[in-house]
Length: 418
Image 1: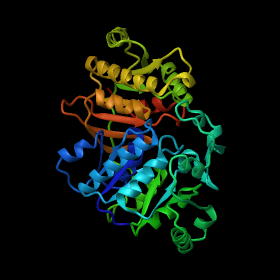
Image 2: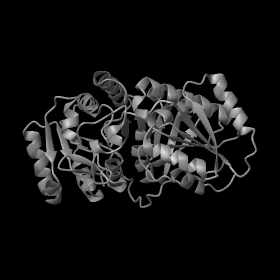
Image 3: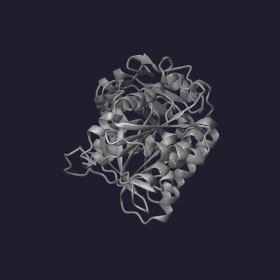
Image 4: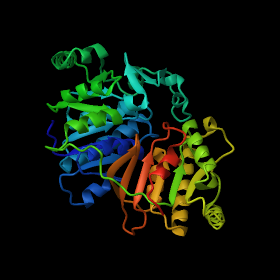
């Protein structure tokens, strides 16, 4: 067990902050996801952990690094001296410049980096990321219109945004045992390496890497898999239950699908055909009045056998033709539509797919923060809303690029009633 007083998680979007932070909640630590770091200064805090989103996924590397550096300074001023830098498991965003910013702000020797998430089929071998055995850049996610990738090699992708020296920790180094791994890390430090990219194809590899963090001189960087390994080691003394706080979800659920990935489109289509959802399609170019009218009209139709609401966007453009600005506009429209629905229907639970969409929806609903409480499915994170006007009880977030087609109906199956 590794004693850690307070830890701050910094991700580049809402869903990233949630799917890293939830593991600390599952292992007995209180953790709050703040929508804006300004809340850190306004609130008198105890020794609870925090998860933060920098909302830098779509900024240029220099801007992203500056935002993260400022966040680090505020975290340190608030007493957070241990940082977990959450990066996207598929290296979207600005991982290189943001890791460099955290190292500078914390004064740490180097970063130990592993984006693997073996439980979801995302592995790292010989420094290359694989999604279910397919090199990242050849996968659907590698062809993301906002973040197209030409390589699956972590070092190559980091080099696009930072000049810090990079080294590699192979699977053979990890399998050699803790003492040998410690020596490998020491050797890399002696050579001046600042970014150590590690392999992992099983959870035990991530656990071995996490055990090297005890001295506190390395910055842990990774996705949900590495966060879980670190959370397990930092559980309070005597903690044995890793199931999180059980939640009682109630219908109607409002499910908002804003991610443009093919995976998310299939999930929305499956929910639409299930008979469990009344679907409201919103055009991305629709003005606010038309959006509210569309919501009112659809909700006034008979639908007793469709207890939930599915909100998705329709657009004539192919995803690869949509700009980043278009994506942000879509998220804002979905946020407005969700708030309109929740003003018309007594909803207690909102499910949001996609990082930008989740942030826009949470802001539109007036949510200031959420207490992370449970992971009801892998990567599906439930938070208890802190909202001045009450209303929404549970906010559930999910990254866009993974999950079975049935994930939205599986969430419904966990509801206890209306």
